[in-house]
Image 1 (cartoon, rainbow, N blue to C red):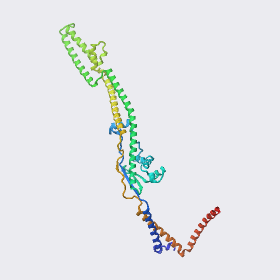
Image 2 (cartoon, rainbow, N blue to C red; image 1 turned 30 degrees about the horizontal axis):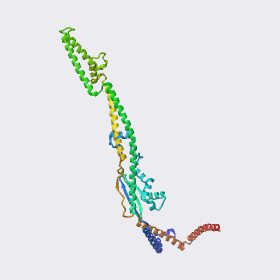
Image 3 (cartoon, rainbow, N blue to C red; image 1 turned 30 degrees about the vertical axis):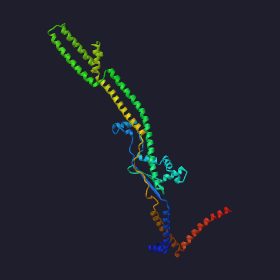
Image 4 (cartoon, helix red, strand yellow; image 1 turned 60 degrees about the horizontal axis):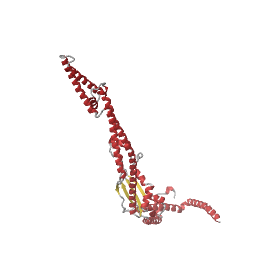
Length: 418
């Protein structure tokens, strides 16, 4: 048979001629695959699901907005610094695959005995081969563990991973909270000093310039000055009236002149300060004026300085209150003993095996046996066809030459043995 003469009928004829060989091979291989699939151990897979980790940074306890941003800028980050495109679920996966977790899982579940080894590294390798961790599109974490012939062990180990993750995460959070608390203690001490310094500066300024309440004192000064000016004008009018009828040295004229002079000095004291008067009117009176009325000439400068000092006190008070709140939260966080992860589903002993897939094994074995048998029958038919004696002789020569090559190695081995 040459290539041109081969057609579907010839192929089918060959298969029919060797059909018993094909039947026998396919049946034998299929039966063997069924037996093997039945003898293979059953594997059970248990899965636990953890919800996406929530942002749990107590540094943002003040909420959003400017105050929350101020907390972040002053106190620094309290969580992990994650690379771009990484999530806390990726951090959890890294923790679960760590040697620390593996050793704890092996010890708590007596897996060295189950795996039949005393080598911890081999046990860890086997544990990781039975462990499967997947991160869902929403960030959920799927932890699956498979065990041979033991569904209870599969669920037990899967839940052990959850407990280990929660314990390590809690330890890391508490350690981080402690570091933050120590940092906040230092900042709190500094904030107290800064607040005290700003308050002292404001107090010194108030004592030096007689400022108690700048707004109220300024209003009182302007009102008092207006009243004095009105009195001054009244006295001057009275003086003019008296001078039209009385002499300069008259007692009433002299009295009004004295009043005008005193009122004028008070007005000058309000304008420029009583200390600029060379001759005080009355010491007690001057002290009262200094304490109540502010020199109008100095009000703009005093207002600017007072505003700056008061603003600094307000800023330091805000910082102190903020740090104090965060400090109290850090102390609570350090002592906190609540679950750090949200478990949607704990693992339960599975009722159905995860592998072997017996049907798939049998089908693949059947198809493989069928294909192999068909290929073999065509080879056998080709070798037994008398029309292909030349080709058969060439094939026989090829096998003979290859066999002779191996016979040389056999002779050499015999020589060495002698």
